[in-house]
Length: 298
Image (cartoon, rainbow, N blue to C red; front, side, top):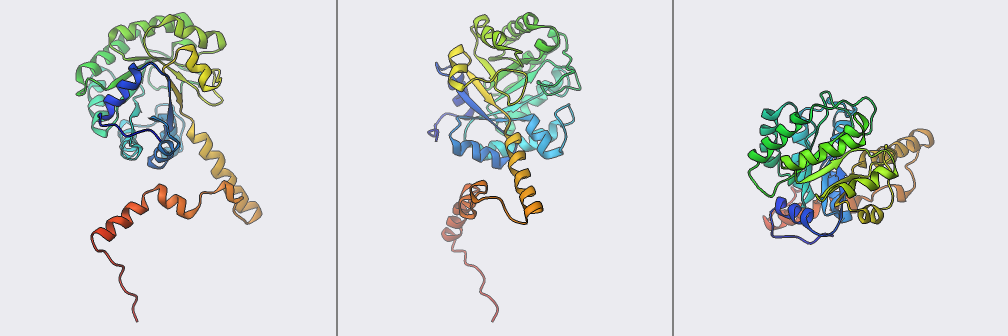
């Protein structure tokens, strides 16, 4: 497990981003998956918009999730993660005025950082076809608005460009530099299309970089240590929803088709799960406040 720090969450994330070593970031879409990421030892949790849209709405990541819905999920993730959380700010749900409000709400929810992207609305998941991007100046305005409005200077702003699939690799690199100059703390070139692009991005930047190691997406996903060796600082593993979908589907199929639960190693134990979700703390509180169960009627 990651050691507890006396630094505020934004300060902890800033320290990691400015440090010498790469680190992994685990996707979560609710309080439970945030707890699982923390128990596994990840130093940072990512509130994945794709996962929140899929789990909360049962719908794809194509701009259907509202800011209110995202913030609701983000609050639970921040409460349960006990480590820095990075929010998915999508397109800021509007222009620089919306960006100004969004950063205030995201900080209130407890996030230590946020990424925003330069797609046109309605946006699409970065590894889907059919994306469009706004003029770079629109994104620059949002970046500047967020930097001006954030209350904590340690809050980490990650600027993502989806231009590789729309305008080409060199245009995406150019946008990355413009976004860095505008004030972004980390640059995120979304969906490099091959090994060359994955390796080339770190050669073009001195700024901290995020690599999206998306399962079954458009980009190569070599082992974590190989990605780190290329020069990326944050290595994001957002696709928890694929793992939960497979596990839950397997359980439902086993019950419906065979009439039994799957093998024990496919299921969490009752006691272990209660410990994960904090029952021992509640029991300790009951003991501390002298709570006793009501006696059964005779």
